[in-house]
Image (tube, rainbow, N blue to C red; front, side, top):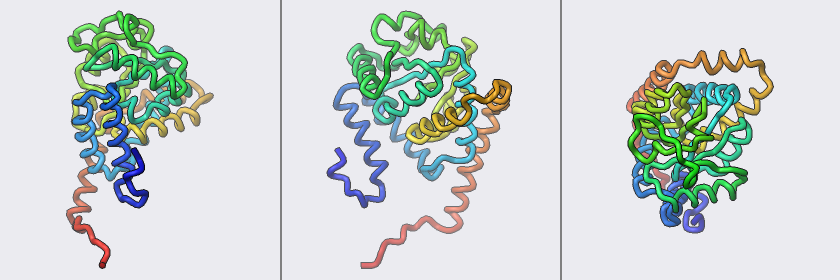
Amino acid sequence: MEAWIPPSHPRRESLLVRERLVEGFREGFVAMQGLIAHGRGECFDYLIGEQTTPPALEAERAAAAALLLAERPVISVNGNAAALAPRELVELAKTVGAKLEVNLFYRSRERELLIAEILRRNGAAEVLGVGDDASCTIPELFSERRRVSCRGIYAADVVLVPLEDGDRTEALRRMGKTVIAVDLNPLSRTSRAATITIVDNITRALPNMAKFAEELKGRPRDELSALAGGFDNDRNLREVLRYIGRRLEELAGRGIRLELPKA
């Protein structure tokens, strides 16, 4: 996969990410629609400069605190997440004591099994949401995402939903759950409905959250509660939009013409 992309290519990392998704599609665990969703997210990543912004760092720290406070934290995994960051998902789950659960909009037994196997290859001891384990139902949700593990998402108090759709985020909030979303689009229904939205690339967000979780472990619960409970999602999303606006103004002011080296 990597051989054809020169190490000096200025877009090497982005191309490698795309190739992981294409490979996941070929192997059958990434949905074709997931490729489209990634392209949409990549567009927003360009707008924030393909870097973790200060508002995202604030959200990642609050999310780590919320996961550490949780009694029954669960990390939901779809095909794109499994393709892009399987090791990081497992490491974060271990750090905060969360369960991992497969949950798919385009659900099939084959995709469930493939994603579960990928997570196990990356160190997961248990993966929920496969086959008959997804026997509970999220109320007022009618897509295949409604099927969840009774031991996982259904019973969870905090759910991390990287690369999520808005319907389930809203439904989980109605169930009284704290929902942490990773979504590069600050205007999406998911971003606006979640308790804590991290506007960042999943490949950057998960390691940041794991780092913050390690730093916060052992801190008093009241300190963690202040971090998680004091987070204002609406304010943070406004800060993201202001960040994007300032960056676009700066680019418009200085020009964005690419200076190529002279021959």
